[in-house]
Length: 237
Length: 382
Image (cartoon, rainbow over all chains, first blue to last red):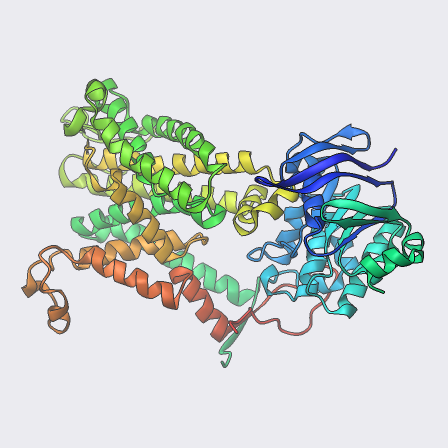
């Protein structure tokens, strides 16, 4: 059973439909990457999955229908999202941002504290800046904070919306390395939206290619880059 | 800018500062009712009333980012609940506080339902409507049997008679006879207890999981939702709690003045705007902001209270204000608000923090697994 299965998913904003009947599968332990140009509907796909915009069709998590659930209920089901543009809480300290990520948890403060120590271990830069306002962090640090915060809810599936946005290539690589490590070591399933095709395809188990709200190609990274027309038209290398 | 002092967070110096501040506050708290003039005690009660109201609004606007220009309605609910129960049904004023709290909570939570769908300016308008409707509602003829119509209610406070000249706490009487002017310190202490209570509730909420949810909603609503914050329930509870806390100073005003009228300032929309301005000037989103803002507001209005007579204005600034036929207190405060928005958008508390950050370096405690040797100075402005 796949961890995420969206069928005939359509979504949009007000009268405008952006996403048309897409089918999307994430298997347990996979890193699935959605590629596409500006306006292809990548972020809309993420929002439709996390329930932050109205959607049609069905979304199943581990076989349970989550289409009708509110965003916070979906988080409780084990889906965490790193929103586009980081979305950290600038006025809260780094520490409190992480605690905010554990809002859905009720397994006691000791377990939450243990998890925080763990993510501080994974992201030492955050540990150094524990008491600083999140708004005073650099872009890369904020993106790390956003990921660590999402992980605080102990998700089964992590949604990452363009983590490379506005980051230096070196920091992006570092970030992707962290995501890959979490995937390998913790078995975390990841659905990742990217414009940076080159970088993202390296770690992808499977890739969806999105164009004007429709999936135009799907397959492993090797399959897609082997296809010359797709490579030239969409991947740009 | 040169650092004058370095303070270690949690170290001796920081504790010393806290202790001295606490000592000064406690000393003033006891000095006012025992040694100050009756007029000054009266002003202090007015300030305490405003503090509680502004703190309640701070929870909503300062911490959750939901605006309300109708909090005077909740103040009014408090005043009328106490007024009606005391004057018509003979309750003891203290018992009515709990009822006022509950009623305002329910009304506040109900009002928040549109707040779940609308934002910003639209929410401001909906709450403004509430603030405008409330005085009209209590004046309505059909409700006159209950609210006393346009005349309002009287005998809504404690009634100290020859047979019952004081209020005893389990047989203990710290006040002496409360007939006549002696009653002011008594009202002062009621006000003080309400303010301390409201402060402790706000502090408890803000520093808890709920508080983090609230700040998360304020800072980034979408991100808060995908962190698992239930937007609807959080907003409704905050609205309810804020309304309930605002009802307490309302009840206090009924107890203190002994009457409730629909046209008294804090019950009309003007009250709601005063709460708002006081909170913003003091510093929205900080626990002490509303307290400082309210104190300053009352200080200015009292200071300038008799300035409608030009001879009372100090010589140097007389030309500035002598044209005014009414005390210029609110006007001065309004000008202060405009100036503050330029020099200190986060109010007096925000300005204070910025100054402190400039001259004093606070080293935080070592954090997490990482150890910090170097001094991390507070984020100074660019």
